[in-house]
Length: 261
Ligand code: OOG
Ligand code: MG
Image (cartoon, rainbow, N blue to C red):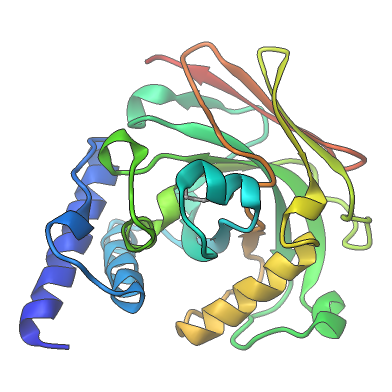
C-alpha cells in the first residue's frame, strides 16, 4: 500500500467517524476513490480508533448480511462484520433519542455472550467452551451514507452501519435456536417476520463465522463480548414515538422506545 493510499484511508476513517459523531450523512466514499475489501476493514479499524480515543470500549462484534432478506434489502451479497462499543449498548426498554441518529432502522437479532478470550476460529464442537448465554436482541443500524446507499466496501468502512443495540434477557446457551419465528413489531403492528433458519441456515454458523473473520483480521474478541448474529428479516425505519419489539419464538422479546425526531 502506498503512503498516498494510507493517507486516503485515514482521511476516510476520520470522515466516517465525524459523520457518526455528528449524525450527519456523507456521500459514498467509494464514489470518490475505489478501495478493496481489505482496505475497507482498515478504514473501519482506523475509524474505531477515534472512538477508543474518546474513551469508548470494544464490547463485541456484529455480523451483517447473514440472511438473504438483508442482502436483498441492501443489494449486497457477502457477509460482513463490524465492531460494537459500550456507547452503542442500550438497556432493554431504553429510550432512544432519534436526534442522535441520521436515518435509523431497527432489525431483530440474536446475541451470543462469550466466556473467554477468542483469538482464533472456534470449531462447532468447542462452542460450549466459549458461549455461556444467548438472548433476543434489536440492532439499530444507521448508515452514515446519504440515502442509506452503499457498496459492500463502503458499508464495511462504515463499521457495517453499527449504531446501537439492545439485548434481552439471557438464556441458557443450550436453548434451541433453529426454526424459531422472528418478528419485528412496531406500535403493535407486525412489520417484518422471518425465521432463525434464515441466518446462514443456523444462527450458530454466524457465531463461528464471526470467530473466523476476527482471526482473519487480527481482532481479538475479549471475554464477556456480545456477538450479534445478523438479522433474519429486513430492517424498518424508525420514527419518533415508535415502540419497538423484537420477538423470537421461545427466546422472548426485547424492547425500545423512540423519542424526538
Ligand atoms: C448493514 C448492516 C447489516 C445485518 O444484520 O445484516 C446488518 C446495513 O444493512 O446497513 O446489520
Ligand atoms: Mg444487523
